[in-house]
Length: 194
Image 1 (cartoon, rainbow, N blue to C red):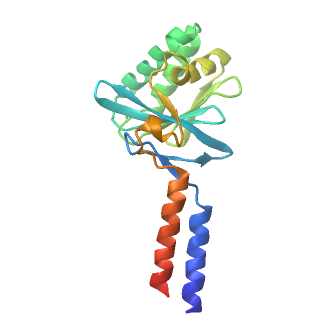
Image 2: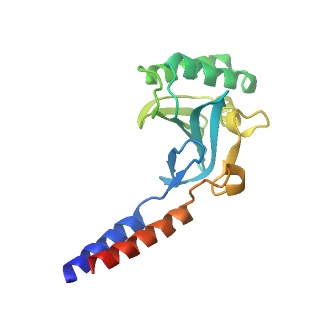
């Protein structure tokens, strides 16, 4: 009996210390509530017609994480982001360098499940693909323009605050809901072990 109690307590501690995930309701794609010292603040979905191309999460440190829900070629992905940058940034050389960097990081395109991370802090735009650093383009204007793709009045998609169920259609799984579900599972598991 003591062993079961110790195992159960260990399980609860593991669950309690795990980072909560927040699920974007339209795509079912999950994002970590916290990543490093940054907190997930807003979520959105980039669509083209009826196709949900990717879900995007904005973190408190100015990082944007795109998770592909529909596969596209490297050329299509890089040119789409470059096209979104052009009206927001007059630095054509930096946009071209960004496009080249992203193409280099997507040798097999951007199939469903690909994770792209763009860090906009520090006067440069950092590019990471599937947790592998690809490069960075040193341009404050480019970094700001990238953030504006998701935050200015002409943003490519609506970005909703995390936990804003009214804006997301009521299907968003918030960290609080995850904690409640985890507590219910733990309670049930505890009774099963006793």
